[in-house]
Image (cartoon, rainbow, N blue to C red; front, side, top):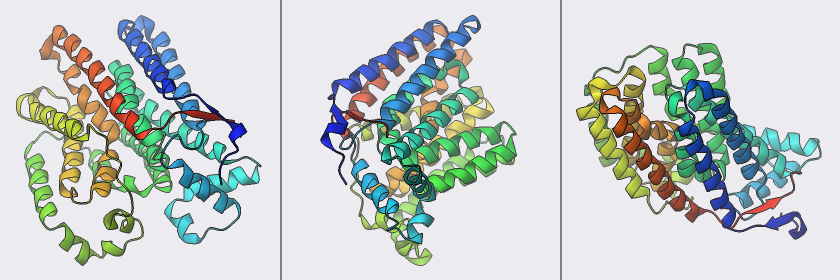
Length: 371
């Protein structure tokens, strides 16, 4: 079903640039007032950005992103009770929220707003709770430029699941195990792709210190091996017919690749190499863990490269860790203040490049009524 034209208010691509400069101005302001005496002001500014991002995503109209038309069709199918238990088993969160919205007399916008609220809030909270808190305004900026449009404006189910699962990860890292495990279980109801985080979550739960670099090289070798025998693995494991993977493996989804994706991958690999070979002894446990996760996500892309939709989906589960990977050099004290200042400038420019690239998947923005 299509929204009525009188419910939408076209604005155009200029809206995205207004949003970018708003986030950028907050980031630069927080960079100036990051001292403890200004912590409350910095928290307020980032909270304001989070609210704007939630409403910007939750109030978007039809046609803004490639996936929304499918969500609208799915929503009205659910509201007419024309869905089956397979749909409920695949994505219970979307189905339950759609039924609830219909019962309350609201439309699809309540569902979109709910997903935006979950996705943005959990990701901002993750940056606040993690060991990168000193520069969490930079993390929010990089997340916005690289992943906000991909996940929280397009792949909303995966975006919400990734936020929940990553927040669960940091809670388990900080020994709040019960809350973290419960939150991770909830994330699976939003999108099953986050199940690939289970080995990392288990390793953190068991208290691994990630001091040795040798497992990294084993992971890389295994990814080359899996890439060479991937088809055979899918056949003997029966995954070719698996309900959640058949569309990705069979090519049913159109892969919308960012124009600078290869550039992004190369920069990421170079940074991983620098941290592993030249700065490993200067990294704390948390940052060694971030490097490990960066290697794992890159190896997923390598291992499943012949199925680009699946490779991108698996790699994007680690999105927030990618953001922190780019921030890791800021926390190497021996590099000095001047290096950190130059690197912060580099990250601002890099974020701008990612933002411009991300706009390729968006259509002119239009706003709709909330309900």
